[in-house]
Length: 192
Image (cartoon, rainbow, N blue to C red; front, side, top):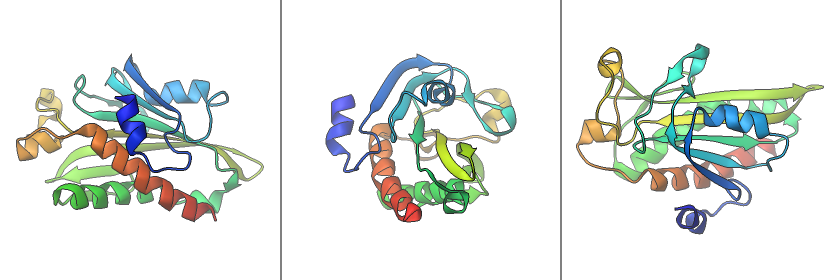
């Protein structure tokens, strides 16, 4: 799978170091712990994430091997103002990309929730390390419900996936590749 993804990536640095883990509690925690030894642009994908992080300390639930759960490590060394709207920018890229790939309309519940048919389909968690007013590291965690068709009772009325809404399987790695290709271009432009 790794080679298939790398072959289709047209990025300068994003995803060139790609780590696919069979199971981990949280890709966000993994990247945070190893951030100093990992290169800029590292992408860590979990086939099964058992305790993904949402905002406000919530847990992000994901059915094994069904969804796209990943974190990216960015080392921009830029002024804070350059990345102030990064989370919203990422959400906009995801919404535009799904429209482009499949023709489906998603919306954003600002700043970090991806909404499909009035239910949450995805979320973005952005954490930064700032030193002397320069952004040294950004860890972006993204969870997208792609092929999950069963949700816990307490989530059934508020969460959904592409498969649940449209009744077919989607290639989550195609979505990942598209996202990385589009995001890197936009990200480079905000650093200039």
